[in-house]
Length: 330
Ligand code: KG4
Ligand code: ZN
Image (tube, rainbow, N blue to C red; front, side, top):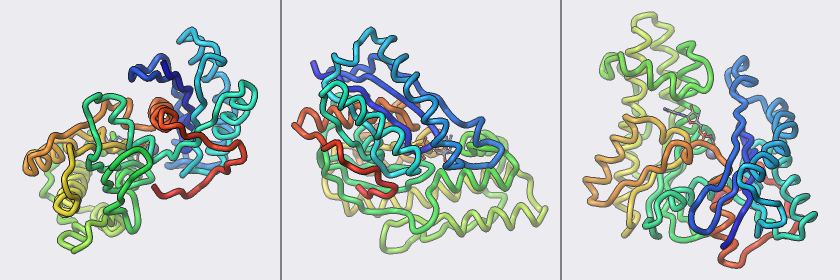
């Protein structure tokens, strides 16, 4: 059975995982750099690259040990090759290349976004192509039609901030620390989503793209006015975000053609009011809704190993000269 070692280091999580052809995650280790970046309110690229370099090799060793697998037993090494913070991506990709060279196994250079896009198939055996995907993370905000491995039609993207970024910036304004998404969600539970009048950027526009910069500025103005409780600002921000997603997604789904399911991926998929809204939209379009377990939604190496496995089974691999890419649209 196919066995793939996956490596992830494109943002602030260093991770290694072993995944097999039966959709089993044999072992995985993730080291978050939250503590290192928290004082700065966001990810500092140089700190991230150094932390990845220090941690990746021990994490790979621990993953192999936990699974009782020798490196020689894996069929291929899959490493994130972009998009992401280039220093971190280089650490993971160079490590993957070194392991591939040392063992003579093929290297599969995985697009991080493809990892997110295919990860739901690791958890849901019956999820078949084509499906609609809302990818919402700290760096990305896209609606895709996932037609097959390596075949993605992008219907929408953000013209400024990603949704996770908007959550993080809102958290910073409200003094909640980093990462902001979970903190904003928690605070919003005690607030009134109608208390603060906030804009819904691009709502009703003809293309299903996203924009969150104006929303963030409005949050800042509301906060600085001193008129509102922070719980109400958090709840109103979250509601505005949900309204934008719902409007943009409905438009995209109408244009998408037949799909088997609506799938959500990326760190923001952890937000339960957003998940509930997506569930309702899927219901209205009479398609099923698939949300992978939270551990697969946020950055991890199992999704990279899985994307590598899907490519490996199609006979794909990459030359060791392949370069890390800070930008790499799907
Ligand atoms: O996918 P991910 O782990 O990393 C990237 O590739 O960006 O996503 C992290 C993002 C952060 O912006 C974080 O604030 C956001 O996902 N996030 C959330 C929640 N949990 C994480 N946003 C809203 N609500 C949450 N519960
Ligand atoms: Zn990600």
